[in-house]
Image (tube, rainbow, N blue to C red; front, side, top):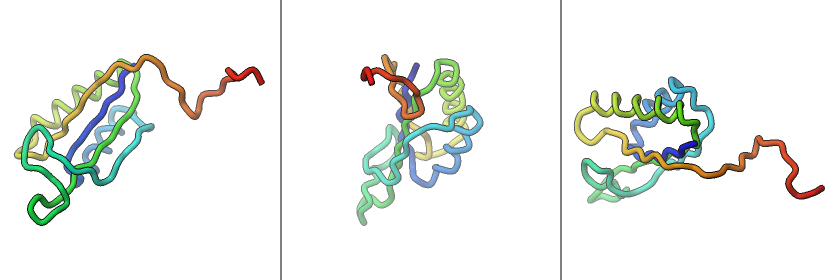
Length: 108
C-alpha cells in the first residue's frame, strides 16, 4: 500500500477532487488552509505580504490506485501554468488500521 501526501493552492481543490474521483479514491483526509511554499511559486502564508493559502490532502491507496493517481497528477501538472500545480509524495505504508475494519484483537 501507498500513502499519498499532496499540497496545492486552495483554489485548485475542485480539480483535485475530480482527479480523486476519476481514480476511484473516496477515502482521504483534507486540511483546508495550510501555509508554506510549494516546489514552485511564491509562499502562501495568509498575510498581506504572502496572501493566500495552500491545502493538504492525504490518502492510503492500493498500489494500482497509487500508480493511476501518480499518472493523473503528472498529466494535470503538465497542463498547468505558473504555480498552480500539485506537489505529491508517495510513501510506502507498512500497516493500516482503518475505522471500517471489523476485527477483534483485544481478546474480548
